[in-house]
Image (cartoon, rainbow, N blue to C red; front, side, top):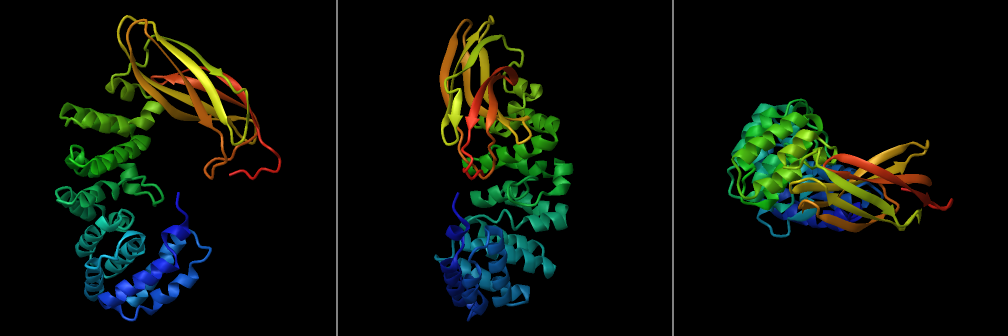
Length: 369
């Protein structure tokens, strides 16, 4: 992941100041002094600081404010991460001025430069039906970036963004957007639709499966792949309805050997290595989703499972598949590792099989993420 300084720094704000000055916000004093304030700030606080400078430098009245932003859109150097705080400024100024649809239209014009997915969310929180009307219009836009904005901006659980609580509680108002886009010609758009479906599955698994079933009944050639990605969390959780819809029998007859742990002692920074073998003992072809589960040791000695994708296979009756997996055990900002006994196991079509232990060794002086 790039650092905050690599995304928005003093050079970014200096260039943005020049762009805005040329677009009619001369002399862009707040933006020119903003870069010195960013040192040591996290990304979200940098965005806020630059947004406030944009609001200070651009006109207070929304029509004149929007004219400057649209003039900046005509300048080729106005692109990338410098547009992110401008998007936020557009949302704040438009909503404060009670300029709803024109504010959303301006964000749609900005989104091809990076993405305005974060900036449309205040509109969706303020007036969901009104904002969704615009999102439905975007699904017919010729630019795939704008079509993606319709799906990505309305995701109930968009990463790094506040949740849209109305859509977490009830995703059905957004379904016209997703129904319009699941057969979109752009993989960029379809990926967003799949991720949106996965968001829904966290809170409404039966609704997500029903949506996927409806799409599979009227598919494009790309629909099965979209549905598999959209139901991935349910598949990892062993959801029988999702597995059955995707053609994976949760009660499939297989013989599982392993995991054969080849590294019973692993030091932080090394790989857990294990082998496995799966045999189809049934009378028909077995369509298998093979995952593995690492049961991480917590500080209190209990274990916390995390499911990882291993492979997908079709095995004829009596056919065997074997393999070796190397799983890294490295310091991460998203997981604190603890020394002691962990476990690893295979999961076939959502059904867990036997687990095996391994020991993680961590030096006392190690800084754990």
